[in-house]
Length: 217
Image 1 (cartoon, rainbow, N blue to C red):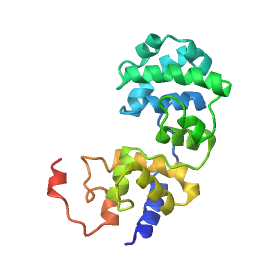
Image 2 (cartoon, helix red, strand yellow; image 1 turned 135 degrees about the horizontal axis):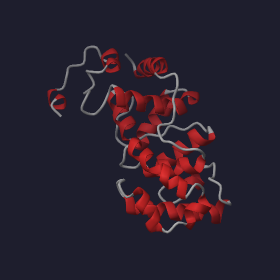
Image 3 (cartoon, one colour; image 1 turned 180 degrees about the horizontal axis):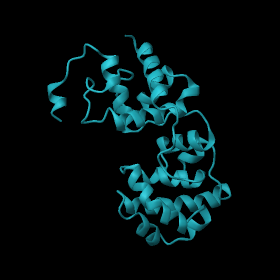
């Protein structure tokens, strides 16, 4: 099966499995979304969703968040990984939104990526989910699955994003990155599938031999 054929099959199967693609991170607007995505670095969405209700109650918008002492922000997110760095970024991000953008989250990659703690992946999520701009956020799980499914060499996240954008229709990107995440969590985890176990991997590569080394991981 050629790469383009695999991509078409993956798209069909994921559309069948996940016709609805709710955003896993709880939020109410672009500001709370960018905060939640920033907090999700090296942390599960479930854990982020546990701490954000109190954080958003204290700092629901850039002005309120900027007014909070950094120690207060840290107190709300202390149980998350990299909490001190994230608390510093959140306060600075809120201040810059007020100073540079009138307290409004900007709708451009360039402006978003200039904010503290906001890298390309975070900016892509915000552009896709808050503003409906076609983007293909690639996290470590999507990066791994793209390599496992033979869609990208896996040399880098940047290369994976470029390869996926070439393979899939632009209008599918915003839904598809979530569908891949949902499928990976449910069927094709790092330890649960080595490329021969889950239904999609078996359909894509029916003759692939199970890796003894990977299966023991």
